[in-house]
Length: 165
Image 1 (cartoon, helix red, strand yellow):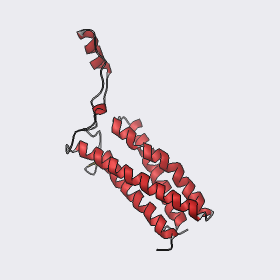
Image 2: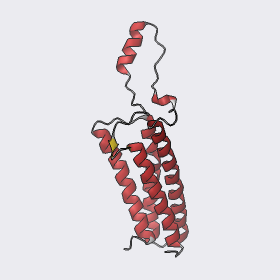
Image 3: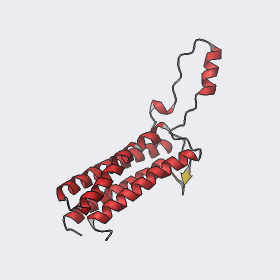
Image 4: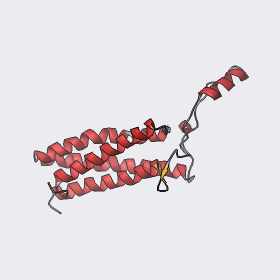
């Protein structure tokens, strides 16, 4: 198997996408609570993992039309994911404000004691304060980089299929 073959590229995309989502779950299990945007950043991976699995299958069976469609869809999914990750990283760096979901929602309290109870029970993971930085980058920024790389790999898969490599 050559990594530059459509099969190899699809397999690499699948492996990286699975590793990224497993990594997110491991960070969460280690006590790093994901914010609202972090949870939304996982959605493209939920769609891409089975699609990348299908791309591996299509490449193995030489289903060229289906393989091309899978690579196009993967490129679009991961390009959108990269943009969303960059948006989240921009919020973390203070370039623009985050959505209201990142501030938490409190019900209208009927008394001061009800309000204080709500404050004690509501725990919001803030979108503008990364829970963890690795090599100076937040997980949102890492998602932007990984997603951009996966989008590029999907485009490479399209070119490999067309015989441009």
